[in-house]
Image 1: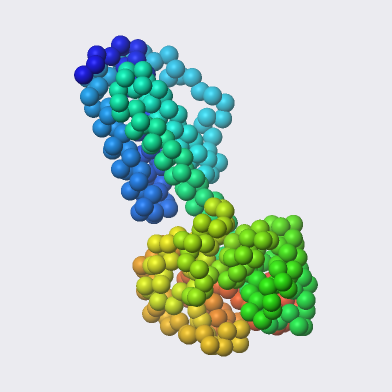
Image 2 (image 1 turned 90 degrees about the horizontal axis):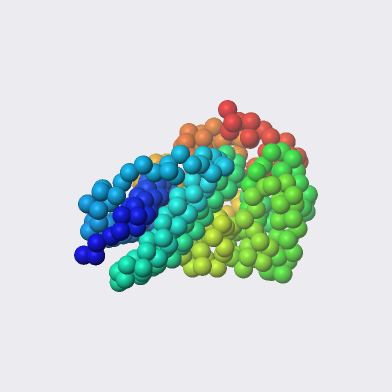
Length: 346
């Protein structure tokens, strides 16, 4: 083993320390907050593999430690973390910078393992993006709760979709989904463009049901997928990383698959018979409880929910309730939204 200069030993010691600290913060966030097994495993394996390289220098590191003139130096804003994204970015950058330093000094020392630090740095860039995207989408998904309004084209005859959207927004809705099973895609696209424009101005979340191409074309906030739609893993490759993907499920197996594939939320239904989807299979209470116990994803219940059964639906203690007919079919959708939100917020 090559004997290190004491100053170089101090540099390596400091950067192995920063690397370990940064990776540990990211690992714990992935493990305990995101509860993402894949990311946690990647980070843990990377951390153990890289720190293996420091063991050969442990005694020299101890011998080189003395007073650190930089220990009391702090940059402006270094102590500020406004949210989880800030925390991720700060610690990812800390680890990435340390990897770069270690890569350069291992080259200087003609240690052939310098490539391990380079490869890990590139891997960490991707992991950082993955974690940030999950936290970013998680913040957006919160807008779906407690009320998620489904703008179903079945109700566009009484009022045009633009007027309906304006009313539900005035009523207090923060998230809507365009669901159109009757019109051709040209017409759906035109409708989606108009609705997205209004939602953007009002800071309302706008999702498209089924049609990934339309969601992409109008820059929707996300897409909601059904049983027969593209797999979540495929859609994730098409949409940009900050876009939300929801999935309808009808069994515990489907719910666990949706979580494994990377869904941001799931919907379970129909809770009650519904005119919006006449062939819907009813979801029984034991199924909802079973799914709640098995997955950590946010859950929305949907189907036939109205003012008469709202209190009963709320007993399932899910994250949100999706409603269409009980709002869009009313003389005043605005008033209907206000009333439902009032009951949900109680």
